[in-house]
Amino acid sequence: MKQNEIKSLLNNFNIDAFQQDLIDWFESGQRDLPWRLDQDPYKVWVSEIMLQQTKVDTVIPYFNNFLEKFPTLQDLADAPEQEVLKAWEGLGYYSRARNLQNAVQEVVASYGGEVPDNPKDLGDLKGVGPYTKGAILSIAFGQPEPAVDGNVMRVLSRVLLVDQDIAKQSTRKLFEACIYDMIAKQNPSAFNQGLMELGALICTPKSPSCLLCPVQKTCRAFHEGVQDELPIKGKAKKQKTIQYATLVIENEQGEILIEQRPSKGLLANMWQFPMIPLASVDLEHAAAYIEQLFGIEIELREELLQVKHVFSHIIWEMKVFKAKAVSATTQAHERSEFVSVKQLTDYPFPVPHQKIRNTL
DNA sequence: CACGCGTGGTT
DNA sequence: TAACCAAGCGT
Image 1 (tube, chains in turn red, yellow, orange):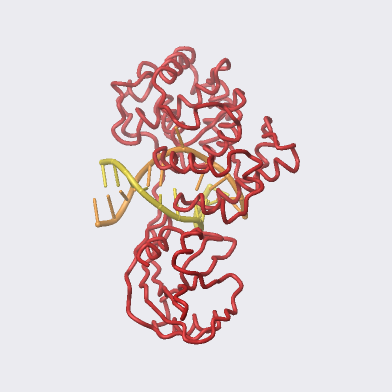
Image 2 (cartoon, protein in one colour):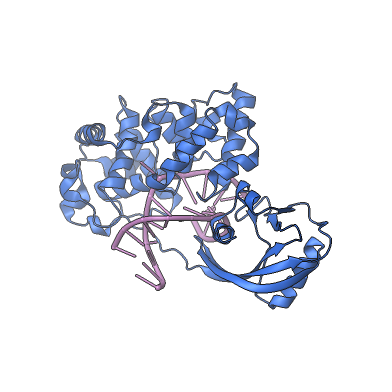
């Protein structure tokens, strides 16, 4: 059934011309990016993880800093998790960092520190999914494996005139099957990167630059004039808003109370100022709850600021208050600490709490 | 398969 | 401004 589908999609499609035009364009015009200086599998790996759902311009400084701090796979494997999260601070999707470190530790333990060059072992590593696996195999090891990301699905939806929903996993698999037939066996790296580069620079989601496109003559959507109608993608749900009371609690030494978030879920293992939802309680009850949770007595002071932060799936609205800890500072909570304002920058904070930290 | 998981830029 | 989008993955 699916074989038929692929066959008909590629029927009358000039694969040779497409390969040639794409690769020529990529090799003559590709951007100079720090992870393109060599094909070191470790560097390719780090870059691919950082680039997941993240723009090139955002990644560049993080990549450079990360490789300076952890120059080799072994360095990353040996590092304290807090240092890895600190290097990831502000980049988002923090489980990427924890999964990456878990995976390089596995590479050290099971593969002598050499990144596996086969689909099975590579794909079994934490955080290495179908896309990243194919990207590493093709870019670092020159293997003709598909690396289907959002760019590739957009480009192929147009070039091959596919109207299936790209949010569905079955559509990604369809494109992977197509790539096995389309990929340039003599240069899989340039082919895969060329598809992504094309999606990033020319075949953009809105107002694609078809007049500048190197594969214009083989693009079915362009010939039909429907490039603006593709790809098909389902709509995202609207975020729900959650309101929080957040406390900047200072003790008599001028230190501030911070806590580490749980090891699973949103912003896992990141640090923050204590906060609780204001859904069903008022501010006084919130303060009392925090006193009980941390085993301290506090006096509520003035409101410092309000912070609104939009995540991909929820919205936080935080009212931030100053508070003084008036009792002994023996905290009942093992994932919390009083630290000096200067030391706060040593801890990895998510952006909404960075906004608070920056005012102290 | 659907959803949770960050952040910043663009339209 | 609200919606959309970006070199996805784990569950």
